Every structure is written in C-alpha cells, then in structure tokens.
Amino acid sequence: MRAVIIDKPGRLRVAAASDPEAGPGEVVVQVGCCGICGTDLHILDGEFPPTPYPIIPGHEFAGTVVSAGPGVSDLAEGTRVAVDPSLFCGRCGYCRAGRGNLCTDWGAIGDTVNGAFAQYVAVPAGNAYRLPADLGWLQSVVRTGVTPVVLTAALVALVLASRHPPATGTAAPARDGTGAKEGTMSRWLTSRQP
Ligand SMILES: [Zn+2]
Ligand SMILES: [Zn+2]
Image 1 (cartoon, protein in one colour):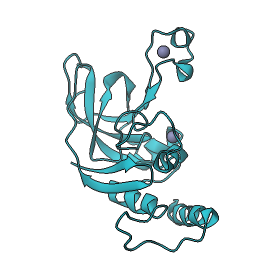
Image 2 (cartoon, helix red, strand yellow; image 1 turned 90 degrees about the vertical axis):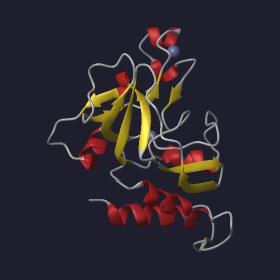
Image 3 (cartoon, helix red, strand yellow; image 1 turned 30 degrees about the vertical axis):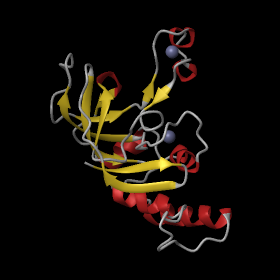
Image 4 (cartoon, protein in one colour; image 1 turned 180 degrees about the horizontal axis):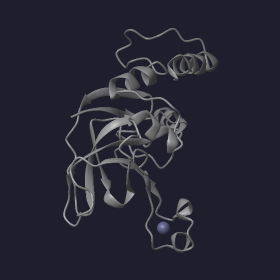
C-alpha cells in the first residue's frame, strides 16, 4: 500500500508500506478519509514524546472494513466505520475508574502505532463504530470531532511537507520563520474547508 511515513522528526515521505493484516480481534480498514490534527504536526516536529519512529500517522479517520481477524464476527467486510484511535489497557486503576485517557499503558492508533495516513490500517474491532449509510466520509470525521479536512494520503504529505523541506533540498517552499509556516498551513486549510 501507499502511506505517509515519518521516518524521524522533520522527515516525511510518501512510500510503499506493507499491507497491514488483521490479528486476533482486529479488522483492517480501508481508509475513506483522515483529518489532520495538531498532534500530527507535533509528531512531525518531534514534539509528541510517546511516538516511536518511523511511524505512519493519522488518528482521526473513517473507512470501510476489508478484512476481519480471528474472533471478530460482528464487523463484516464492507461495513463502514469511524474509528476511535484510543488504545487503553482496560486493566490499570485509571482504566477501571473510567479514565482511560490517563491509562498507565496509553497508546493510540497513528500516535504510538501505525495510523491512517495510508490506504489501509489495522485496528481493534472494539474501536470501530458503524456509520449510518447516509453519512459521508467528510461528515464522519467532523462528527468525531476532527478538523474538517479530508485528504488523500498524498495530499496530506504535500501539506505536511510544506512545513519541512524535502531531505533532498529540492522544491522547498518559501519559509521565513515559524509564523510563515503556520500561515501557510492555515491558508491551505481555510481555502479547502467546506
Ligand atoms: Zn487528534
Ligand atoms: Zn489502563
């Protein structure tokens, strides 16, 4: 598959990656859309400490189930889902108190394991929520609280790459400081919001 890969802070590329496989209790989702979150930019900038590199980012997404692993019986191929990226252990004191965001073994799809700036992503079946048939991809990510931007992986890469010149030093956009970088991003997003 094709995916956005951040090899290390400041280095992003679109490249071939291994297709994910559904392990026990997991499904593979063909990504229909994925929002860009501020966390993605922090990951690119090396400012999100839990992140292992290299990583495929993208944690606010919806898509279609294309395969299910052992033990998954309620999410058939073709089911459209929105995915909660949170990965909680379910056993620690915080999890048992219903505060999974403070889990001592916290993780998240696209933050600590490969995510959805890709054609496919494997996720726990319990994190996938069925979408109404009349809900489009854009509305799906907006309703899950995501910045209303829907992009293909390639476009995501172009946007994020505008914050960091290619490693080869070619075709780097004009940059004149942090404010300019943020401005570029803001203008790009604003011009494409519905
Ligand atoms: Zn986010
Ligand atoms: Zn926990």
